[in-house]
Length: 344
Image (cartoon, rainbow, N blue to C red):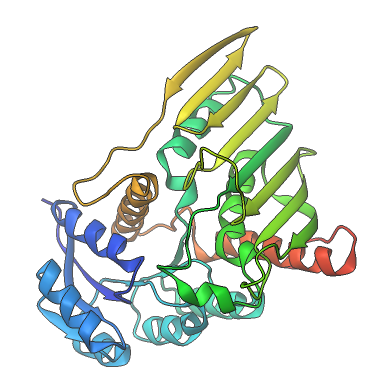
């Protein structure tokens, strides 16, 4: 067994349960979950009891001072990230922060620069690129089987009720792009390269939602490739693919499609083959969330390995800045009515 790394968890709410389960399952890989923290004492104590964690806190600064942490995972609301990340970095603790990185780009840049100057590991828990279907599709792309992709459609369209578990989303001024658009824009970057400019149209189709619940983006990549990136929480199509992301890629030698039901179709040399790319259902997971839950585990495993090996994560703060800047460009494009470049 590798030498243990003491892990602390800040945030014990709805989605953080996936992180907590993942750290528990990574014990044999060297993750030792020693402390949890939440401003709600009931949630913090419940997490400590459920996951056998010896220490629980309601004050993150106290946890950082009292525990000798080798890694902290922050899974709290985005408006808390700047303060919590700054506290962790000031203590020299390698840090993971849940997406979205922050409410605005300026705060993302501030955290990234603070970590860089302190020479402390900082990564964003951007998990869509770690989903099994995305990992399998990326293998095909990197094998050059279809050639370098020149066009793509990446769609996250659902009518699933996300508001019961996360009611605060109803009141967000900026919603669909910040909440899930950052995921699909990140996938677009992974498959087609860096983003040159973005055009966008936003809609608020649900009158109970303050911000946009639908975004349709047209993206030009530096490679010359073009992608259509779509997100909505107001789809009424059945069957609902939630929480899968549908991907179509075209290259000079063929094409690839990730379809609902975790099927990947690859066309090369005039022939198509289909394979299942479904994620395993972990012992604590359930359908249809299992694809996301397994990706949280895979992301945590990647972060743990990166810290142990002294290297940056694939979704380092510096990398995720590019995704967040693309999201900001989409908002700017929707406001201006013209294509906007990411501002970094």
